[in-house]
Length: 348
Ligand SMILES: CSC[C@H]1O[C@H](OP(=O)(O)O)[C@H](O)[C@@H]1O
Image 1 (cartoon, rainbow, N blue to C red):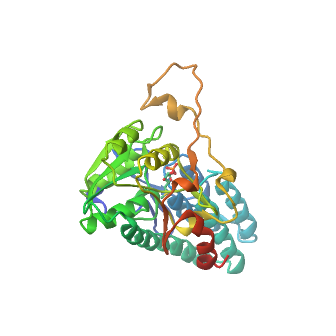
Image 2: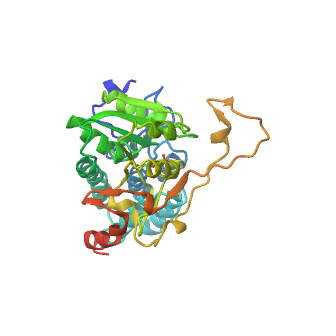
Image 3: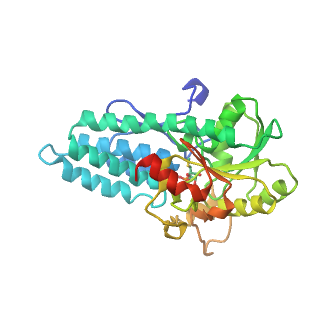
């Protein structure tokens, strides 16, 4: 099955009334396939193994994981079962705060209005709300980009695109909005080892929409930015602390340091649901440690000797002073303005 024959817009998570249909992101770009998720345990596995990945997409998937949990629950005590499902989903991946935000929101609704239809409506609202949020992020981000040159060269890291959200994307939402307005020359996409979300997923999205994209090895950012080939950097986020410190895919902090050194603006694009107002700074953000096998081989081809040790943190934290602006659905804020804006926006 080829993507172009399947759907015009990328929707990594869809609900068909009794199951969740996920784009399998572990086999892109070579294979486009979808997987039907019928149980909450299958959804937990899909999140843990990164069939579905990306902070907002993980939140949307977990929300439907809770709907599946209600569907499979014993009728005499569905809430107790749902709390167990919530615990299983929470244990899948620790960094993306959207996961916990979505689960908490679904549990609150279940306790207040316990019905399948109500939970299905809430998960659907989270999905549709995320698409609208990404479009708003795209528009605010477009206005925040440098006024010159007319056609911008943007660098991004990992995949913060439609595949990482319910659709349209956060960092790639800014890219799509800039492209639509004729303000985009090219995107430089870091391949982003070890899972290669940039080379496999960001490039796949942009090629399909005929947006010019150049894939870079992760070692190239300093050379490319240093030679003046990049006008701005736009990345996604998995958790943003109250002071603006931002957890994102491993390697993001290095790109931010390089951008700061060369005076290139560095933007983080994310929904408010990625902001964790309970964390005063990024020091407390849990960083997921993933299996060494992700680094040891690609497609079964060993990249180094068998008995070597690996260190495989999935994320790093970019300190707020390295960030020019944080683009959310209500506007663009300097890191130091985020907490106050969050109070106003979210009534915290
Ligand atoms: C739109 S946020 C996407 C964010 O999530 C990715 O992590 P992963 O692929 O491990 O789920 C990466 O940090 C992206 O920036």
